[in-house]
Length: 114
Length: 111
Image (spheres, chains in turn brown, orange):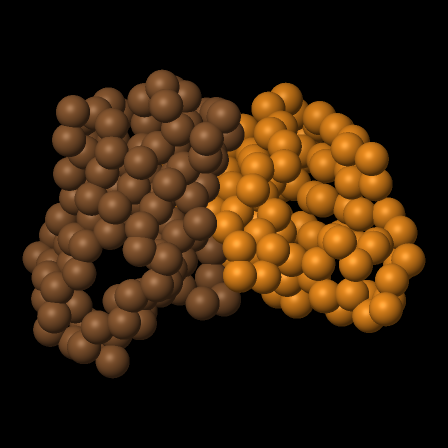
């Protein structure tokens, strides 16, 4: 079975610029997650979708971050404008139903904000 | 909010020695999951524990869920170079169904 696909793998931008990340979950997985992982820390949940609806976005900085999941399949995460502290790896994950089941992670996008 | 801490933060062991990481939650958990992240890689699911006092084994790895369902441990017997990486626990809270990742324990092996 194909895994979670993410792109791009790396991105370097200057502060105040905008950036977008793309994720295609495992086929048939209803739940999609975006995590932010700062170097040396554990993944922090930004947003969780169940099909195309938002389940949890309590830790998403909504003044600059936005995410959507079109037609309940793939998803994009956008940052506009980026700040230096946004430098991190952005991980997309999916699961069949919800967080009570194991998560499958993509390879992530490493973002550097200069 | 729910917090999940792991100790130690780092562990350097000689190849062949044992390794243990401990996970502690500020709240009672519905279940706990363990993930391994190799250097430069992404987290990969290892196991899920659900029952109070549950113990599960995977070859040289032994996972335990505490009686109070607030702590867990991962023990690796006779470490190998392939065990290198960061081990994360992730706790699922009761009611809120929110999975919170721990701070991780980074394991390095001295050949």
